[in-house]
Structure formats: structure tokens, C-alpha cells
Image (cartoon, rainbow over all chains, first blue to last red; front, side, top):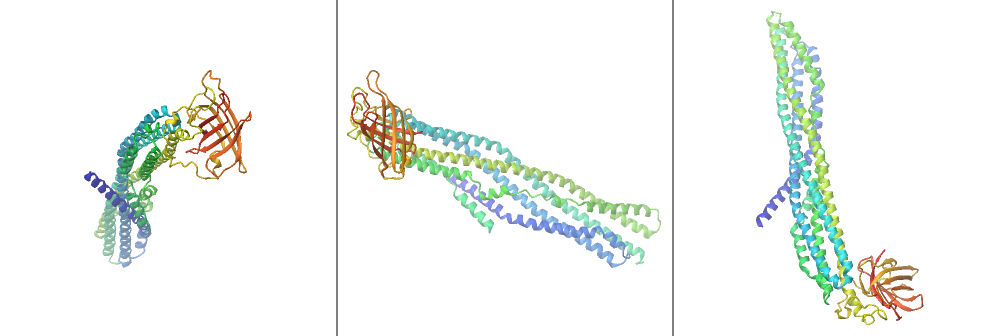
Length: 232
Length: 375
């Protein structure tokens, strides 16, 4: 009994703590919007510089410091936009982790409700059986005292109501049994989404390295062009 | 701040959850309050109304605990509601490489390829140095393009995962809300039952004490209700103990606005309650206007074959509306016989007890006592 109470308490606490975290995570959702704005802006800044990079470099002499400065400015803008995008993606991944946790909690709660439906059915049946016993006892009294007829009718109507409730309990349990598959699918879909977002973070980091490699190579070419032309 | 209040609401919802033990204990207490109550109703002892009240109270306690438990399960917590209302974040648009990006890299690759090809035939070491730098740059772009392509492929997968997640979220939310609605329906059904139990215990008390009460009245104590050979009461009234008046159903509390409790069209239901002459059919119409009550009763009673008794009863009555709950009026039959009729509102709103007594006439029903239901 004590163990059962402790287990229930632990589940209760875990659920409370989870939803506490989920609710506090809502501020992160708001932060996500701000990170999205930042990522959009830094991307636009970089794209503007990157698009006419070659045109601006071509306008100056090979050894003009403006050429190197133009490439370096674009490189910094490229890094800034990938950093901003990564920050946004990390926040989206954190949100996805919370969503997955929420899905697991709901799945667990619904499983618990379904498991309890057996108790609900047996308790309802116990209630109906109690009325049946009352009906049997009252039937004997009605034989002696027909004025109890309306009470007997009312008791039978109550038994019918309990049967109706039992049927609703049964239908609800069946529907919740079917819904379990939906909650399972939800958890799987959330887990998959979380995984693909993590992959995106990892691949974006890889892409950042390659962009840096490209701009490094572009700067190296500019310097070679300067050295072979002697600044002419 | 909003989140703190959400959390507090959720915590309140959690702590407000009623365990099954509470209603189970209440159910057991109800069942143990008086397991033989219905057996005792046939021959009620003086303390029967107290026993009924005890069971009625226990039934009410059980209904309260049971309803609270089901209601706590029916409601979604604020946090769950918040989760259900949220949409799945889909960052794909932001993550996708723009067309300008791809075009820019394609142009650079084309320029570098052309230059590398053109410079290949030039023997000048300086040009060769530039060509090699261009080749390294082109290789860097190729590596970059490959990395972007890998991310694009992963992004397609992420897009599919997001769509699946959004669909699964919507389907789960629908199921969650449907479950909550179904449990709310169960709670409503239970509330209807709770109201029904109150009516039941009133009817039980009324049915059990109806005969007893009338049997204690000297005018009805006897048994034969008609002169001549008509049958006696259907119950051994004189031998019944006289129970206390039902605590849950005071009979004579003044209630001047209670005209609605006895006006309208009433009928005797098959197997309805009665004492004395057994009704076969009864139709009673009562109306009230400007404080004046008028009514007509038409009925037939069961009489033994060959007894010569007249099963039909018909009379009219009228009088001023009284401030008491029970209303008593003078009655008159078509042949001028006088008497009184008493209208007693029943335990339930749709029940009306009627007592009438008339001067004795040969082979005529003189007195009767029965319960009618509203049409």
C-alpha cells in the first residue's frame, strides 16, 4: 500500500515537474521568434554582400586593400548568418525536445486512463449490482405494500441509467484504446522530427566549415593575383 | 507571470484530483447504511424515515465524491490545453538554401572552370599560380555544394517529419478532446443519477408511509371504504405502526406559491400507490385563477365481480387557494353528495397524493387515497 502511494506520488511529481518545464519552456518559444528574426536579417545582410562580391572585387586593383577587406567582410557576414541560423535551429530543437516530452507524457497519461478503465467498469458494475440487490429487496416489499410501486419504478429507472453510464464508459474505453495508436504515432513522429532537427544542426556546422573554406580560398586567390601582378 | 499562473492552475488541478478511494469508501458507507432498508419498507417501523434519511444522505455523499472524481478526470489540465492549442514549429523555410545562393555558387563555378581551362595552355608561371588558386577555389565550392546538397536532402526528410508530426499532433489533440468530452458526458450521466436517487428515497418514504399515515387517521382506519360489499383496503392498515412524518418531506409547511404543485392534468399510473379502494383509472384536472381553485375528478375503481358496487366516481370541487402546502376543498358529486378532497404535493414534482371522503351512499365509493402522476 505504502509502496503504491509512493509510486503514485513519484509519478505525480514527475508529471508536475515535466509540465512545469513544459510551461516554462513557453518563454523559449517566444525567444524562438526573436532568433528567427535575427537569422532572417543576418542572412539578408550576407546575401547582399555575397551577391555582388565579385563585382566589387573586380572594380579595384588586385593589391587594393579594399579587395581583401571586401572578401573578409563577406566572410564575417557568412559566419554571422550561420551562427544566427544555428542558434535558431538549436532553439527549435529544444522546443522539439519539449514537444517530444509532452507527447510522451500524454501517451503515458492516456495509457494510465485506459488502464484505469477496467477499474471504472468494475466500479460501475458494483454500483449496478447494488441497485439490483435493492430492486430484489424492494420487490418483496412491493408485494406487501403496492404503494411502493413508484419507488420500485424509480429504482429500475436508476438501474437503467447506471447501465447507460456503463455503456458510455465502455465506449469511451474502446475509443481510448484505439486512440493509443495515435499517441504512439505522435511520439514516433516527434522523435523523428527531433532527430532530423539535430541532423540539421550538425549539417549546418559542416556547411559553415565549407563556406569558410570557400572564402579562405577566395582570399588566397586575391592575394596570389596581387603578388603575380605586383600591384599593377 | 502568465506561465507562473498557468503552472499554479495546473498544480491546483493536480492537487484537486480525487482518488478512487474517496468515492469507494462513500459507496461502501452508503451500502452499509441500511442494507435492509428496502426490505423494511414493506413493514416500516417508526424509525423508518430516519433510516431512509441516513441512506439518502449516504447516497448523496457517494454521488458527490464519484462526480468529483470523474470531473477531475474529464478536464484537461491548463498545460495540456496549452499543448493542444500550440502549432508545431516548422523552420524549413528559413533553413532552405535560397535560389540566389545556389545561382551565385553556380556562376562562380562556371567562371572558375572557364578560367582554369583557358589558363591551362598558358606557360606563364604566374598565370599557373592563379590557375592553381582557382582550382583550389573551385574545389572548395564543390565541397561546399556537396555539403549543401547533403543538408538539403536531410532538410527534405525534416520537412516530411515535420508534416507527420503536425498531422500526428492534430490527430492526438482530437482524440484527447474526444476523450475529455466523453468523460464529461459520464460525469453528466452521474449527476442525473444523483438527482434520481433523491427522488427515489422520497418515493420510498412516501410509498412506505402512505398507508401508515392514513391508517392512523380515524376516518380512514377501518378498512371498508364503501358501504356494501366492496373490498377493504389493499393493506393491513390498522396493524401498521404509525411512523414519524418524513423528515425529508414535510407535509404541512405553508407555501402559498405552490399552486403549480397541484394544478394541471393528473392521472393514475398503472401500479400506482393507493390505500383503500384500488383505482383502475383516475383523471384529475385542477386549475387556479385569481386565487380560486377548481377541479374535476373522474375515476373508476376495482370492485369485486357481482358485488353490485359502482366503480365510477365523479365529482367537482372548488375553493380559495390556501397558504398551506396541502389544499383541502369541499367536493360535490353530480347527485349532490358532499364531501372533501385533500390535495397533497408529492415528494417529486410530478406526483400528487389525493384523499377524498364523501357521505356514505349504498354501493358507492365513499373514500379513497392514491397517488397521481402529472400527465
